[in-house]
Length: 495
Ligand code: UDX
Ligand code: ADP
Image (cartoon, rainbow, N blue to C red):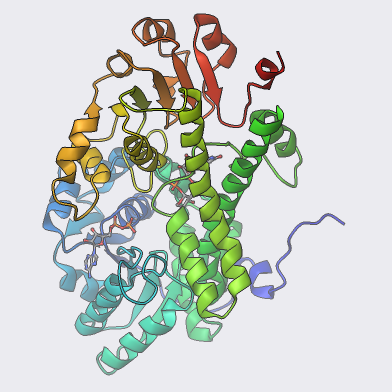
């Protein structure tokens, strides 16, 4: 048996262009929400579909102004080139939401869906307030039929609520078809992911109208994506697939991080274990890099969403299973902190820690759910002094992330313990330890002069590699005490 997954549903096995179903050609698209998802996605649609006019709308005037300027509100390699090539031709940014919806054949809903902060499901469930108000807006202003597409990551069966809102508020004679078309782009590679996606997923109701709407959207993607990569399926499968993809990716990281703890206790090396298991073609090598923990706007949020969904469906074991992926991620940060404390002779009080990296991964200025935020919080609780350097994150963002929301004067307290530095060298001056939190290339020993860092540090000088980017032996030759995630110093303890 090959073990390959083959679609049981015959819709999946049929190439879309053989679906002999009449469908409308899309010539005008409106995208509600000019954020991380809507902006790059619809810019690429316009770039690759010269016959389609794409208008991206947002209530936030400053954001729209930025999209219309030379200083785009989002940094992604290649995004500026794409936007500049089509802006003013078939790509427009405006706050005139009503006109854009009214003129469109198809409307993407790409608004924010943050985790609820209060009420039922607080801390777990997605807040669908923005999806609801965008849907109400579509119903209110539409004077012709629309295909409405969920682009934001939403809980399974959100389409039911959208359907009810549209049906009970739309003008008589206006017909709405709802599709799910989740986005799988990762930050830093968004344009690459959009230009050459592994797959494009379109979920629809299995009715003639639903399949016709799916075929219309598939035609848009077919302008640049090979037909066999555009797959259609039932609406609920599509909604769940987005949560499932992120949950499975995060689960791999938590699995390798759990193994990293065993490595540290046994003398195994987690990088070697990842390499060995990744060569198994059934497992594959990606997303097996042990780290201080995953961050980003999606993984934790989507898993907690899945936990909430499982609990609402009375599946406590399933909820517990997925909750553990997030718990393991938290435990990894606590374990790493404990290792720093015990290595530095069981106290961090008054010691200077040079923290390198604040973004949740390299090549982005985004700090959402970054492991560095939690680690610095723990170091502060141990009364350490932190000298922080990140090549991209804005100072205002760092102060915002480190202050406890709602705690008066916390920002002042943070500033007593944390100093922002202009370089790794400045951070290392007088430090007892360097702590790598983000895997920026410039922190590698091939880029940074670690001898120079060593010379200005307190001795013994420690390096804690939370991202496995350093050559341990090379640094030990300089004189550093090196502690790496998923690697122990067992040989030493044998002596
Ligand atoms: C993720 C998904 O990859 C993307 O498909 C989805 O649409 C949005 O969420 P993103 O959050 O941009 O994308 O970042 P990703 O590259 O997936 O990394 C997430 C986190 O996992 C980062 O903190 C990264 O450092 C960490 N990570 C990743 C590891 O610790 N080890 C790995 O092997 C891979
Ligand atoms: P994501 O990461 O999912 O793209 P963002 O928060 O970056 O989320 O962007 C969502 C955008 O959607 C925000 O700029 C917000 O102003 C916009 N938005 C939310 N609700 C509406 C609405 N009803 N009409 C227009 N824009 C909206």
